[in-house]
Image (cartoon, rainbow over all chains, first blue to last red):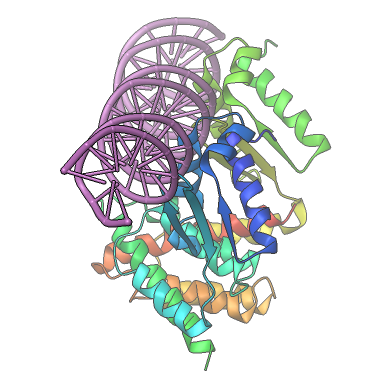
Length: 153
Length: 153
DNA sequence: TATAGGCGAAGGTCAAAGATAGTCAAACAG
DNA sequence: CTGTTTGACTATCTTTGACCTTCGCCTATA
C-alpha cells in the first residue's frame, strides 16, 4: 500500500503530537526534510489537521517564524457543544468524516461505531436527485451528537 | 470456449483474492497489464464483484488513488444478503428500526451501535417529504449493512 | 539616541498541472 | 438481443510554483 508524500508527512506530524499536546514546526525545514515544496506543508495542515479533527493552527511569519499545532483538550460536554455547532451548517463527506474521526480519537466512539456512522452519511447513502446532501448530512450528524449527549448525564 | 478479456480479468482478480481477504488494485496498472481501457476494470468489478456475490468495493481517486476489494465469508453471507434485500425498498422509521432490532438481538450490533444508527435514520435526521425520507432511509440501511459485511471476512 | 526605511527570512494563498478513479452511452460481437 | 469493449467527459486528490504578506533586524540619518 503506497503512501503519498502527504500521508507520510501527516504521519510524521501526528506521531510528534503523540508525545506532546502541541508542537512547533518550521515550514521550510519540514519541506526540506521531506524534499517537497513548502506549500505542501500547508496542504497537509489544511486537509488533515483541521478544526473538525480538533486541531488548532497558529503561526507567525517573518524571521523567527513558526507554525504551532495544538490538539484541543476540552471536557466532553464542551466537546459535544462545539461539535454540534460545527454541524449547524451543511457538511461535505470529508468534513463530516473529520468530525467523526475526532470523536474516535477522543475514544467517544469505537472504530466500529465510527465506521457505521460514516457509512450512514456517505455519498452513497445520501445520493438524492436534489443537491441537499450536505444539509441532510448535517442533520444526521446533529442527531448522532444529541444521541451521544443523552448518554453522558 | 473463448474467454472474453473480462473473464480473464475476473479470474486474475479472483485468484489474487484466494490468498487474501482483501486486495488493493490500481485501475490504470491493471488496465495496462491487460491492454484494455481503464473503464473495462470498472465493468468487470461492477458485473462480477457485486454485493450479491459477497464483495465490497471501496476506492479513492486522485494521486495515490486505489481500488480496494474485500470478500466476505460465506457463513455470514446469508443473513446480510437477506437484510440487504429487505432494505431494497423504501422503509418507514418503524420498519427500519425493526431491522436494526433484529441485528441487536442477534448480537450483530451492540445497544449503543443500534441507538446511534437509529438516530441517523430518525425522522428528525431525514426531515423531508415522506416518500423521499423512506427512500433515503433504505439507502442508509443498505450502506450500514454493507459496512457490516466488510467486517465479516 | 531615536526611528524610518530597507532587506532578508519566514509563512500564506491560489490556481495550474498531474494523477487517479467513475460514469455513461455508443459501437461492437456473438 | 445481450453482454462486452471503448473512449469522451467528469470528479477527486495531490503536487508544484509563482506571487503575496508579515516580521525582526540593521543601517542611515536627523
